[in-house]
Length: 384
Ligand SMILES: *Cc1c(COP(=O)(O)O)cnc(C)c1O
Image 1 (cartoon, rainbow, N blue to C red):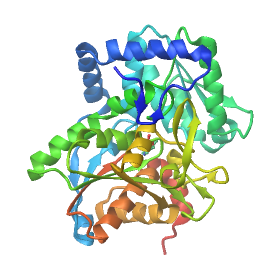
Image 2 (cartoon, rainbow, N blue to C red):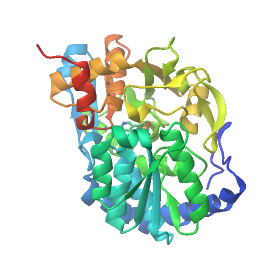
Image 3 (spheres, rainbow, N blue to C red):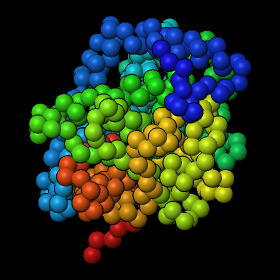
Image 4 (cartoon, rainbow, N blue to C red):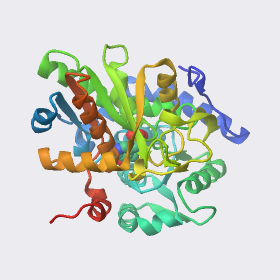
């Protein structure tokens, strides 16, 4: 049981009609979701449907080049190509057990919408995905994928027609349909219980990695590195090492650089605010949310990360678009593994740490694969 507070961050800052439903969800999570029967069923789905456990891979070529032993936790090999399926399976299964018939979600680039469409099909739940009109136009293939799996994709035409407008539309839907609908939140963000529930569903990443690392090397890693959008893959990796002597590094979307007004690095440079139902770090008012990777394009961040920053448990740095693209190319060339652009921020941070000689062994969460980013990358690189 928990109040959903992380130091001074987190909480449940929502309009009155959502208070009671969130309390019910929190109770369902505590009573059903954390129970043994649920956990066993969840694990079965993680194995048979999503493809767990994922391997821990020693990146020998990259390690030789930079002088530290770099290990990759291969979440890119999961069904759907990223860690998102862990959380979607957990929440959809809980929604089903709690008697919900319908899932809704918002999506920006379409990755979370696609993962939600998968679990909607799997569990036979009606699924509606809210997506800004601009994103629908930019992400035709993801929209097609979602519809192919039976989800309704609703174009949001208000405001800037982007992710924030899709969140608003989904919240309105929830208020209207709360008796039979579950809002499947895509990261460790939003009001309680989402930050702790999503963290718990993703913590399988770190639990596996910890065991695999010890089995392989006889020790714990010196450092763990992950990219931070909302912060779910990072928290999923970190949680199992929380009480260990392992240094944590979070790589945010540094966009055009720390001095610019276009980035997505609320922990490296933001201020404390209430946003989307939680108190957390949010990028400054004069900053435009921007990252080369759509998955890091979020103005806030999970409240537990805000706490980790506050108490110094994790160091958060903005990695620029340029640095991420260089790492994207580097991992592709050295290891034959094409990471997602989000993930490339973590790879870039790991390379920096290795070059600085900061740590001997570095564990990187390879949160997703880069197939979805081919068009963006092809615009940036030319091969002579
Ligand atoms: C969505 C996404 C992210 C960002 O989300 P987090 O909640 O911060 O993990 C990172 N990597 C990949 C591959 C993604 O698809």
